[in-house]
Each structure stands twice: as C-alpha cells, then as structure tokens.
Image (tube, rainbow, N blue to C red; front, top):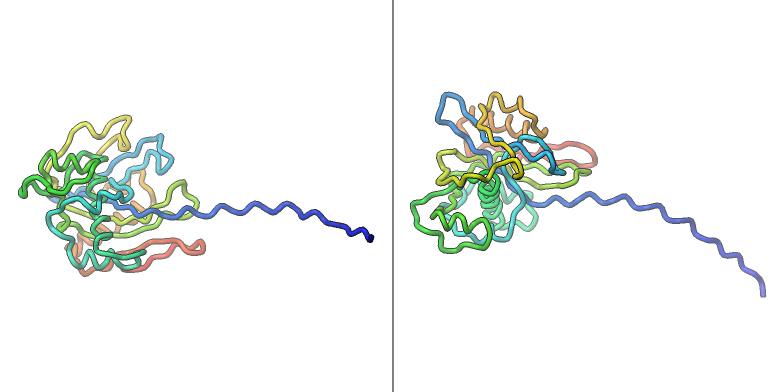
Length: 244
C-alpha cells in the first residue's frame, strides 16, 4: 500500500461580523410656534446608554406590535402616507400608520406628553402597555397633524441601528401631560424647549443637526406637503441622500 500524505487545512480566518440590520423606528419633533421664534423640544439621553449617551435628541424609538392596533382619531395625510410607503420593505398603509403611532407612543413614554384629542371619549381598542395610559386619560392619538420631515438609517458599525422616520407636530396638539417621566434615572434626564436657531448649539448627533436644517427650511417655506422628504443612508461607505 502506498502511503498518501494528508495535509491539515489551515485554520479558517474568522468572518467579519455582519452589520446589524436596522430596525424600523420613529421620532417626533414637537414645535412650539406660539412666540415670535419657533422652539423645538429636545431631550438629553442618560449618560449610561450605549447608544448616543448624553446627547440631546428628539423623543423616539422602535415600532411595537401595539402601534398597529391602537384606536386613532384622524388618519395620516395622504401625501404623508405616500412618502412613508416609498422605499419601504413590505409596504402597507397599516405599516405607515404604525410608524406614526410609534412616534406618538415613544414621545409619551419618554416625556409624558400625549399627542391627540380628548374630544372623542375613551379609545375603544387599546393594546396592553403604554397605550393604556391614553385610555385612562381619554386621549385618542391623532395622525392628521403630523408632518413627515426626514428618514435616516444609522450607519454600519454602531451598537444599535435604526431606520428612523422623523415626524413633526405642533405643541398645541398635546392633549395631556403625565408628570414625573423625565428624571435622573430615566431614558431622558432633561427636557428643554430651545429656539430652533439655538438648537444646534446643544450636543447633538450629526443626523439631528441635519434634520434641524431640513425642519428650518420647511418652516421657512410654510411646511408645504409637496416638499420632497430627504432619505439619508450609507452604501459602500458613502453617505447618500435620496428624495422620497
């Protein structure tokens, strides 16, 4: 029998970790236009967070199942819905609605502010969780006053990644406020109403500054529904913008 040499394969090089898949999320910019100069509501994130610690941000977070089921008063503006559906994975009006609802729910969870109306009685369909507080206080979330301002995907390599839709609404649409939500051990440790012209002086994530620029341009134009919505994302290391 002839001996046959058998070579031992070299250890395979470890594979690079795949980038995290962005999760659908929504953010709400509350605007106070009661004075001579518009103000925006900004919250300072807890320093212990892995994602954007200590930064000033708009309230927001990922979509949850209950956002699809909660009773609502006032549907999304058709133009807003149309823009939300563009470049969406598995697009549907229900998913667009859930994104807007997530922005309202997350704003309540982080600030205690309930966007909606008390004119329609107690909401009939209320899932478990934070939406129960809307039922307790007789607040129906309203979507028809929401403006779709921008969309942005967190760059690869971050500890968390979101496909975030930025909405704006007027502070006069806040129907109720629950106190004690913001504090030293909360997700947001501080809330400030800051003039739009001064907001960029805060410690902000880069995308927040970009969205503030877009918001300022929209306000100067009268918040027209026809204005395209910028979509920011990365591809092959390049920072790209596309209009929706």
